[in-house]
Amino acid sequence: MGMGQTPPATPAPPPPTFALIVGTLGRIPELRRLLASLEAQTFRDFEILLSAGNSDVNDAMISLLSGKSVRMELDRSLAFPTSGMLDDMDPKGMFTLMVQSGYLTADSEEGGFYDVRVPNKEIMTHLKSRVRNWFGPGWARIDGLLGSLLSGDESKAEANLMTLIENPPNDRAKSHADSVHALHQMLITGMLSVHSGYYAVPEYHSGDGVSDIAVFPKSGSGPSVIIELKEVPAREDIEDVVMLALRQIESKRYTLGVRGEPVRACGIAIGKDRAAVRIS
Image (cartoon, rainbow, N blue to C red; front, top):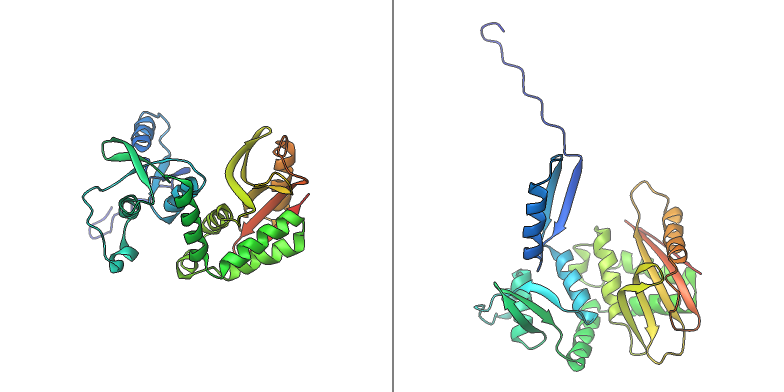
């Protein structure tokens, strides 16, 4: 290389082959084990993306509304906030406030982490009512979607779902409307707060696997629906994806032993600005 010449630029390394996206809310012990395991791997061509955002909060709320406990970190030193502080509150602060207010109970403390759950049926009913209020006018669209699924009306269900996608229920949902995963979670959360004649169970174990959500009549009399949700990649045909969801219910026998008359299988495919519903 001659005098005054610029040395050649070092080429940028190629991007990693794999990206591991890990949700962290209430999962710090599991995260430590995961990172230790990854550190011991001989294969190194990957990157780790940590997420502690709204999707983790939604996952926790879905578990709590379905009667499960969630392991999460709380801040027992948190002062009771004024209303102006709530919009910027992190997940730890939000759930701590819910414990302080009596909406949740916290047991089995270890290193600042607690098993958190909804304490009783009355508070569960109240929380579901608050979720319905959060959805605002969108609650009617969730309820309409559920009614059309239970009745087996594909075209009406698809229209209700598209209306929900095009008109998110409130400003907070609109800010995440470009995320298909957020729409997926919004649908599950809304169905967990269904009207008094039915109840919903996420991650329902039946047949040879686990469906995304199952909806049952409380009285034991009436239709039930097993729902499998799929996200549609940008270049995929939505009809192929929704039929894949329906075939999964059939091949995994998710409707086996489910009570209700009839028991409907429902595949739902959600993409950006598009949706499809198929019922059998």
